[in-house]
Amino acid sequence: MSTKKSVLDLHQMKARGEKITWLTGYTYPVAAFEEQAGVDMILVGDSLGMCVYGYPGTVPVTMEQCIVHCEAVRRGAPNTFVVGDMPFMSYQVSDEEAVRNAGRFCKEAAVDAVKLEGGVRVISRIKAILDAGIVVCGHVGLTPQSSGQLGGHKAQGRTLEAAKTVIEDARAIERAGAQLLLLEAVPPEVAGFIRAELAIPVLGIGAGADVDGQVLIVSDVLGEFQAFTPKFVKRYADIAAVSVAALSEYVADVRGGRFPEERHCYRMLEGEGEKFAAWAREDVKP
Ligand code: KIV
Image (cartoon, protein in one colour):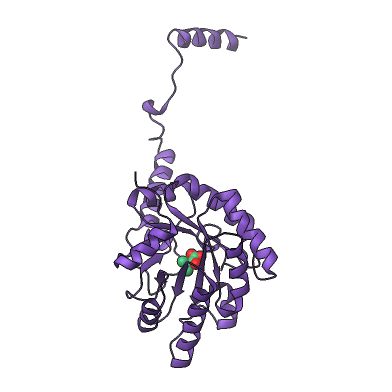
């Protein structure tokens, strides 16, 4: 069994040039698979809104849903660094609410860090959460909770001016004291510039290879999420196809009388079967 990494271990991995592996996880069994596979970190992302609940985006996701899934993931992966994703409206209103909600992730679900979206405009929230002694991961570039303002789920930093904005956000997050940073959907040259400049680990999703580690959505990796597949996803399995084939076989077996078989039945205890048969015959006599 591997020992759980701390944020300092993750910093040392960056210093040694070792890539950090990160996946989202939402459930007990998948978290256990991820721990067995040796991932360094699990993100209980608000992408659970789409991947688990079938919402069209992340905005409807609640604190309660995030906490319940973090608890399940913590039970499935007790020795993995778990990051709880702060859902929309859990930190936007005030520093106080941000701290209270970040604290819930730690007290109720024993996460190792919380992640919140935004750069310069959430710096006071990041500082307030850090002041409460909680490890913070920033998230800049494409920030799905505010995708309406960005004009949709679009890559960010694709012009010089836009790249400078992403870089300013990243710098502000490190200056505020956050210990980890996620870059989403930015060009590799912008991501590489940020990785080289920042001392904290810079992880990417759709940000190319020149970062300190990668995260992907596990439902994409396993081929479970079917609504759409972003360009940056590499699919490693087709769980949807395997599942539909298995479930169709079950349906056909039940309809065709091939399930259950003798080996799936609980027989009566020795001698009880005969007694039961005799009783049943008596019982049906007129
Ligand atoms: O919620 C999520 O899954 C994310 C991804 C961008 C990794 O934040």
